[in-house]
Every structure is written in structure tokens, then in C-alpha cells.
Image (cartoon, rainbow, N blue to C red; front, side):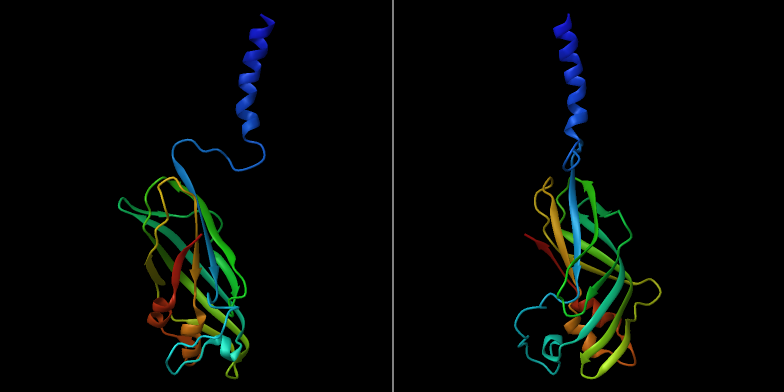
Length: 196
């Protein structure tokens, strides 16, 4: 009798011990997705040699930060799922020398093939290196913000994933006029990819 009682107590204790130290075990088919952000994905490397009249921020050594608010959604054939968690507000360096976690969350298992990011605020605080320009540069996002959708394969339906939202500041920030950057210029520059 004592052996059966001990075995029963041991079985009851196992689920409680399983939750200690590490990720929570989720039953019911979910995957974890982390969304990171950077100011310029080419930061820290060699200067850009792309043709055109604009210089890469790396060539002029732009300094400062970009602060933005964004909502991140994953898109599958069944629809879209928002990554919930802390508010999607972040500050990154203009030169791309850092990466920050924007938002993360658990979503239903599915084959996600695109990422949709809705920016509601984007503002750069330039402190030097942009051809003598300093001060605040805002992206003109209109009333409802701007939505960027990029195809990104997040792997199998049960595989956890990390994505990088690259603001690619070297593409839009040098084109500021009167402290503003056009919505289309910003939207076309943003890149989103999976981190491996």
C-alpha cells in the first residue's frame, strides 16, 4: 500500500517539477516567435557601394537613434496573428550597431509565410555625421501609420523562429526634407528576414 501511495505522489509531483528551469511546456500546438529590430542592417560592415546619388550612412558616419512603435503580425493562409506581449516600442542606433527585441509571443502552430509590421511612429534623433544635419527627423506616417508586408518563411508549423526588422535607415534618412521623410520612401526601404 505504501508503494502505491508513493508512486501516486511521485506522478502528481512530476508535472510541477517539469515547469522549473527553462521554457514552459505548451500543449496544444504553439510556436514561439521573437521579433528583433535594427536601425540599419548593413551597419558594422564595409561601406555600401550601391550606385546612385545617395551615400550610405556608413560613409558619412551618421550617429543617433531611431525610436519607433510597431505592431507585428504573422501571416498564414488562415489569416494573420499578432505577436502580443510588451508594447512594440523600441529604440535602436541609426548606424545599425545594435539589435533589440521588439516583441515576442506564442502563436498557434501554422505555416507562416509573411510578416506584416504596422508602424505608428518613427522618429530619428540625429546627433551627427549626416552631412552636417542634426536634430529630429520624423517619418510622415499619416493618420493610420504605414504597413509593411514582406514574404518570410518561418519554417515548419511547430518550429520556433526569430525575425529581424531592418529599418534600413541608410535608404531613407538621407532623403529627409524639412525634418520629414515620405511614407513611401520609408515603407520601400524596410526589410524583414528570418534569423537563422
